[in-house]
Picture (cartoon, rainbow, N blue to C red):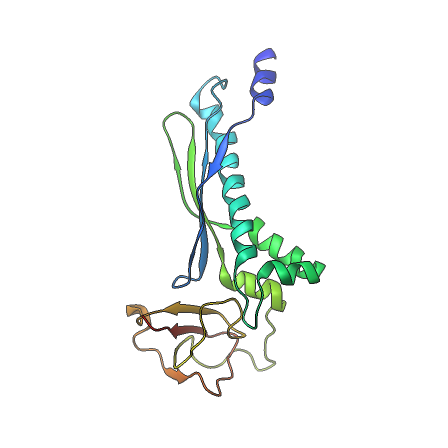
Length: 196
């Protein structure tokens, strides 16, 4: 009984590395490290709290970086969240539901995790949930957008987007569309070519 109290009383230490935005993958990515509780009776017991600590550390820095993302039309995500409580709640939910890209336990019970928030989740947090046409989805799954002069930002199009300097191999056969006069379809992933 005394040992269990010692485990709970000494929290695991966690830290996170600087997050990055990968516009080509459409992700805000952060690493977190949860240091094992040295008072745990063995590494297996320490792993539970250290994994949670690593994930919480990654989410903290993801929340900060997501808030700094530029929004099309001006401002940052934080500006939109300050103006609208529902937007703030949806952005917070997107960060809370960050996906785990990698998780690796260490032999001492510590964990290293890499987590990400999709930029599309942030766009939908600001714009609201996607609506479906009565007839269902139609159109291409992926389209290449050429001629767009915008810098990477959340909500450049009212649809999922990634920003690349060259067309990825998986999208090489996708139809090309001109930026001018484009009416985006909600189900299409738009691969926006940006200058190198």
